[in-house]
Amino acid sequence: MRQLSTGDMLREAVKAGTPVGLEAKSVMERGELVSDEIVSALIDAELTAMGGGTGAIFDGYPRTKQQAKSLEEILERHGRRLDHVIELEVNEDALIDRITGRFTCANCGAGYHDRHKLPIVDGVCDKCGSTEFKRRPDDNEETVRMRMEEYRAKTAPILPIYEARGIVSRVDGMARIEEVTAALDAILA
Image (cartoon, rainbow, N blue to C red; front, side):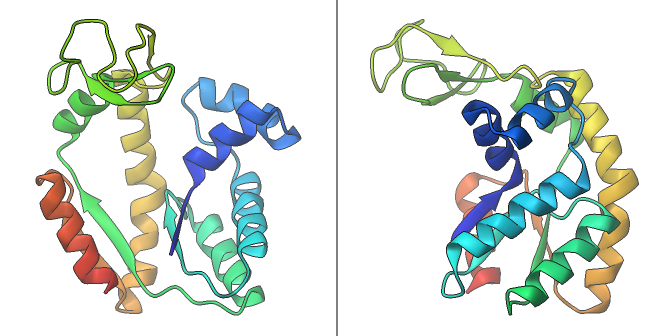
């Protein structure tokens, strides 16, 4: 099983300086979502590269009705089908706290949080000893609230499509990570 995170895929394309990455960079820096066409093309390319023997978990896709339609077409071309749709239910204020407080080691990528997980030694990465840390430029309250509005306006309306097919499950995304993982494992088993 392979996780296909559209956000990670886009960040990799930006880092690599690919044409898609350059196109997406300015949009992402504004905290906006890149076009449906670009994201769907990335998913299609990844499924092609994976071949038919590996399952996929789509993380952050589809987010719009057009992406949902594109996904069906892509899956059909690849001889695949969608088995589950999982909605993580969250408290928006708590989500903002989680996102705006996170930061990573610039060297090894170890994750930290301003209130929930600081380095043992202030300013020094627990994992590699680096003293350089970074935050994603879009990890701010305004961007998170805008994304939640986008979710309510564009993504939530596609859930009935999948509910009609009986493949939607909901998981408490605010539960402890072990509980969320167990719930996801039970759905995907």
